Length: 267
Image (tube, rainbow, N blue to C red; front, side, top):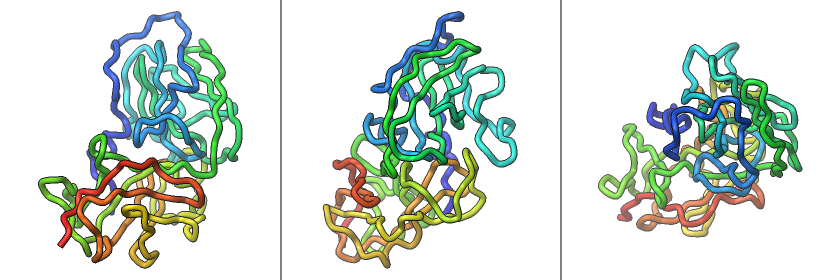
């Protein structure tokens, strides 16, 4: 199941209201603490091939989201036409989804290895500070409908919500970022054309109310075709699923944050 158009929009919109123009001639300002996972807007764990959001000031002179015209050779652009904004991570240009004076949505280069890394924004030749970040092998995070509810798409394409909850036994699709390497591997910023499953699939788990579901209920866990850095999990809800369970994703010892729930009505 491909991601719905509203999900693509979620990757390229501002969470913070900001001025439409940055001060021209002023260098970008930001910090390592203002870099967050785009799925849950939380600082902390990051990983290669993770969509992240950088907040700051004077990050761009205008507001612009990626468009089909920006794509070349099946990859995300490393700068959006007319913006003059680039983000370097370990001197590797990152793919860009969105820029505004106060926010940049970007893709951590997938070819990087876990460990310390340097991030820097370049705006029309003016360099912001070089900040230190740390990358892990995986940094799972679920995209959320609101502060407490995971995005879960039902078979008909609608969302599982409090008004229209999913039910035990139903197949749903969850969306995430930060799940790590896939097979076959992707090139830097590559927009996947087809399925590619997690390389560490044997270490991947979906936990409902703290209990890992049987692997046979995970029908697919890998990249979302058409979206660089976005992953999906096609999941059959166990027959024993309770109402509105907490849902977490784990890759080895790395786990998505607690407190996120699925809209489910038990039988």
